[in-house]
Structure formats: structure tokens, C-alpha cells
Amino acid sequence: MNSFAKEILDAARSAHDPSEADRARVAAKLANRLGGNTPSGGGGGAVAGLGGLAKVGVPILIALAALGFVAKRGLVGSGASLQAPHAVVVAPPVMEPAAPVVPPAQAQAESPQPGPAADPASEMAHPQSNETAPPVAPPPPAPHANRSPAVAATDLAGEMALIAAAQTAIQSGDYATAIAKLDEHQRSYPSGVLSEERTAARVVALCGAGQQAEARSVATAFLARHPSSPLAPRVRASCGMQ
Amino acid sequence: MPMLQVEAASPPRASVVEMSYEDIYRDHFDFVWRNVRRLGVPEAFADDAVQDVFVVVHRRLGEFEGRSTMRTWLFGILSRVARDYRRSRMRHDNKALAIAAEGEPQAAPTPADIAARREAARILEQLLEEIDEDKREVLVLVELEQMSVADVAEALSLNVNTAHARLRAARQAFESAATRFRAREKK
Image 1 (cartoon, rainbow over the protein chains, first blue to last red):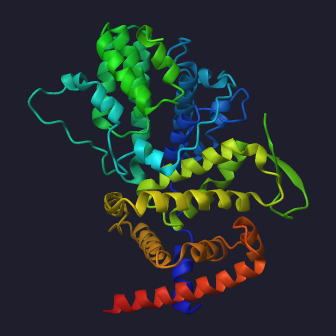
Image 2: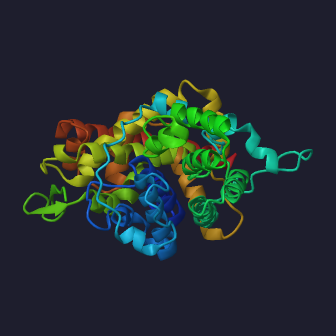
């Protein structure tokens, strides 16, 4: 090869290395897709399954692991707190069945927009969720629609804070606050990595708030879009759907 | 805890160590990520493609017999995933291609090192795009991942002589693409 070709190869050899934000984002998605668990099991299974996140910092690691824990336990089924670090330690080594490999065509169907896009299930199924927004003003633009990898980790922390706040509110029976937090998450992170958790939590919150019809509508859309989600059983069980 | 019987990298097939899914993910995420991109999966689809690779790894833990290195085994999986993405998503979806292209990182004005890195990535992707899939895979593994031709042959289920021939052709094709690129840049 001539020297110019070699120069290009040398210059580009590390050009595709992932950023810490890339590692964190994919680990969170993968944990969600595999049920927040990995084959290793063990007391710290959820944490171990996110071993690639070590570089993003302990708070994010713990929070992501906690989300995995919640996914396995069905959101609020055990009453365990999302924010309690010990919940990570005691996460049971449940072996979820491996998610089916999604062929590209199906994967595309699940993610019709390759760029930032809202979760269709959450968007189409709970149109009233935007009721908390100003009635006349257009929806605010997603502040993270064109986020760079450098800020993605910060976005993830912000996402988790909102979802955790919603979970806490659900556990204390404050469903209005929970719905408000989920609305805020949807406005701020319409295509966030935790949009699946957001929609599932919305079903639980709506049921708790007595909004059965909307809860069922959201649940139906969620199950159509995420039939193999680890959160699906909890969603099905909501509002007496099972 | 389910463990994999994996041959240690050095010496390649002499000692056997146990490797869990977490070990594989931790040790090889970067390898999977950068090669998914190098094999032509646009940035907009990279997350999904990388996830698909590790979902397959998750499902096939028990199938890995340790007769090849982990990176060889992984590349066999990721090359199939990347091909699927390229064929199913890109060739038949011009809209997706356009969106993906819009989402490709452009050289950022600052800081300079980020801009240079992205520019290097962009040029490499552009040149690799001009090379046949088969040759591209060999070139990526040998020239960028610096794997041996024997390992590449194993990863791609090729005869070693075929892998050598493919590498020679890939280098020529890359050199030609680089020459064309430089000529365009000078205009």
C-alpha cells in the first residue's frame, strides 16, 4: 500500500472507539432488552451485567442496575425502592429467557425512525399525556434531539432521575406526581433509552389514579410494541388485564 | 454461574480460562462497536446492531467451544449482523440512508482533536464503502484490528490462501480508493 493509504489507516485506527456515553447508552439498552440481567446471576447480577459501565461512574452504574432490578421485579411489585442502593445488592439472580434476536427488518419495525424518535406506543396510546403541557403553545422541542455523545451520559442520568422520581411517587400512592414526572420525561427525552420504562410506569400510574380506560389503551399499545419486554407481565397485570 | 470455556489470547490455544458473559461484554464491547461501524453500519443504527451482536452472544454462550479466539468468534457474529443491516436496512431504504447520513458526525470545529478524529473516521468510512464487503472484512481485521490472516480465515470461514488473496485485493482496492480520494480533494 502506498504511504497515503497507510496514513489514513493509521489515523483512523482509533477513530471508531466508543465514547463512555456510547458504552453507557448501549449497556442500558442491552440490559433492558435482556431483562436487566445476564447469564452470570449472582448477588450483584444486575451490576455485573453492566460491567462495561464501570467508567461512567458509580451513581449511574447503581442507578442503571437499579432500573434493571425494577424491570425484573415488575416495577413496584416488591415495594423495593429504586433509590435504595441495597436493592442492587440483593437483586435476585433471575435468569430471564434470552430475548429473541430481532432480524433487521423486525428491528426496523420496532425502530422505524433511525434518528431520534418518540416511542410510538407511548405517543399514540396516551394522547392525554400532554394535557399538562400548555394548551395552546406547540410542544416544546426535545432538548436532546441532537445530543452529542459527550452529553449523552448526562442525559441518561437525567432520564433515570425522572423515572426514579415517578417510581417513588407510585410507591407512595402519589399517582398525579408520578404522571407529571413521566410527562416531563416524555417531553425532555421523547426517544430516551428509558422510554419503555416510562410507558410501563405510566400504565401503573394511570391504573392507580383510576384512569382505567387510558391505562388499558397505553398498555395495549405497549404490549403490541414490546411483546417480549421484561416489563410486559407487569403491564398485563395492571388494571386487572390478566 | 454459567461460564464459557474460552482460550486465553496468549498463547492462543494453549490455556483455557473461564469467561463469563460479563467478561466478554466488558473486554470486547469496543471491538464490536468500532467494527460494526467499520463494516458500514451507519451511526444511527450502530446501537441496535451492537445490541444484536451481544444478544446473539447471550443466546449462544453454550455454543462457543473455544477452538477459536473470542474475537474470531465475535467477528463471525458481527459480520453477519452488519451484513444484515446493510442489506435489509440501507439498500432498500433510501429514506433511512438519508436520515442516517444526516446523523453522521461532521467534523466539529472544536476541540481540534475531536474534529480530526471524526474526520479520520469519515474518510475511512468513505474509502471502505468503495470496497466489496468480502474484501472490506479482511482489510478491517488485518489492517485495523491487526489480526493474523489465519485468524481472519477462521473468523470468516475461509481457506487461508483465499484469505491471503482477498487481503491482497483489499489492499489494492483501498489504495486505489485512497488515490481517488486524494485526487478529489486536490480539485
